[in-house]
Image (cartoon, rainbow, N blue to C red; front, side, top):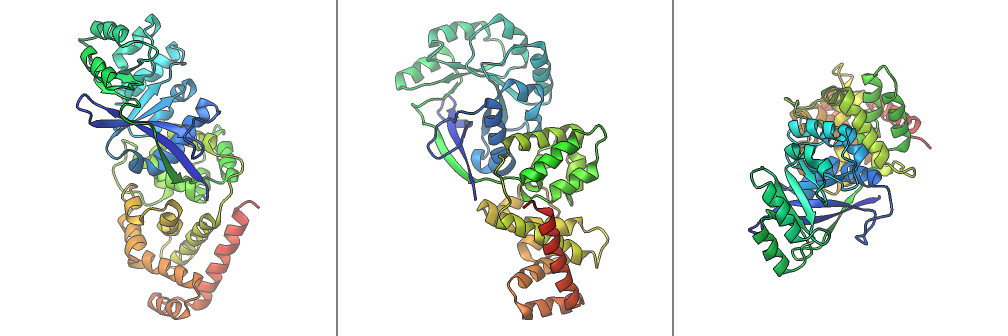
Length: 400
């Protein structure tokens, strides 16, 4: 099992209350920024934390994330909820008309826009009506200079953040100058967080990229590909959950695909593709999750035509082991149908009985298999055939 690392540094208000965290990508436990492209760093951070562990990382606080130029132009931030994401425009971004249009759209959609490591420049003036926070690195741009600039915008709604605050004296000076928020070693060094990384099969990612490149969007093909990968399926539901248009619980991956629509699906696939590494391989838990999903689907088809909720139940039955989190807390973060939740958490209903059946079969618990098959009026040969078919289907599906 591989791990994903992120450093978070608190951002405080004038009363030293934490209002958010700047999230910084790390590729190992040494808490240093790796020598990789900013686009890849942002994609890995978003894929591994905002689509999986974002509630554990941020709680109810804001998450400040650096976005390179291409990510902003492609509206990648819109894959995530506007409520607690702060879009930081990196200082190296060119203040082009193309970027301005993207910022206008995202600001109007409710996203908080911040200018990172800001150095006053007339080219950024058109952006200011859409900016909520301006960050000054007080090591590069003095508190006195920043105070002069802030005075010119005292009637605006923009908040100002002092970065690299390292002493009590600097904190007091920054407060007197009019800064609203503060960040730096005086308060806290970046704290390293480690989570298990949900790495999708590179084979599936490549096929998804081929699908989204086609002029005719095939939702069924995309749904089939995503539903075969535990990492992608969990991240898809997390992404769908953040959509402002969602009004009901998700029963299947098809619903999640439709909720997102073509534009957001393309961004979603692009994000996970960039974040994926070429040595990603499904491990035992991933393989077993897919195998369970297929078994549950085959058995459920003997009772109902639409077996998508059964596939979902089997696929998510090992999420607690994959993520090292209680299943109840994981399911609270994604809009899974109540029938699926009851099956996963209490083993109740038809889906719960089928899930208990596959667990019993995996453990060779023949008395439990006999009890459940009698309760469901299933032939034991049918159970054996379904299990064999699920194993073969999984073996054929996953790349060698």
